[in-house]
Image 1 (cartoon, rainbow, N blue to C red):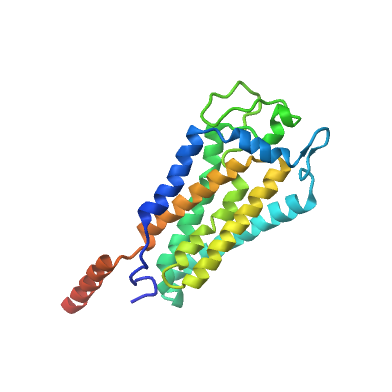
Image 2: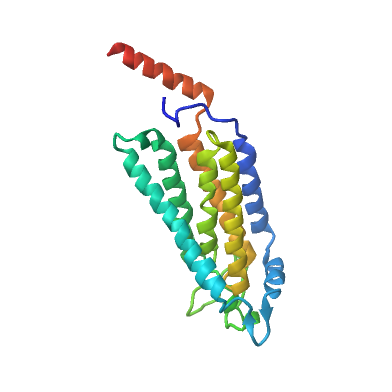
Length: 247
């Protein structure tokens, strides 16, 4: 039996799907714009702009280098999964590696088409922050513009929150490491979110949407790919025994 073919720890899927979906519904019903702007105002100076707009640390380190680090993790996961297809020691980790590749790929690839579909403007493009665009709620019709927005959901935050997949990959076999991965993913995604908010690239709710999307994607992939309830595992073992007995 491989490391991934063991019964999973119990998990309340209904609760942990319902909570993020309920929060999404709330943000669709109640426009978070006033709260977004109140937070953005903390980092905006009239006549100067957003305090982090030209910050070397926020742009070069927290945006570029840190994102590259997450990309390295994704590449290593892909390489590991490809090696697991061969008769090597990584073969027993094929399922979790495949899950990690799938979940991270979906988390990061969802952002671009949603940005194109929604055309939400960035804070630095809005009139109240020195730009020439008008703020509109997420579900409102956008006014005609020569520069369509590309700021919902938060793209950079998805690099950090995509590491939520590490939590689900590890939770059944290495719970302590899983908790550490959860803290790292939330902390990194939170830092990315705060950094881009300080730069005027996103409102905070844009990044909260990213967190909710990435959580649901990682959880859904975990349920479909990784989760092994006792009954399903028992049937799999029995089928394997029958197959070997008939050989």
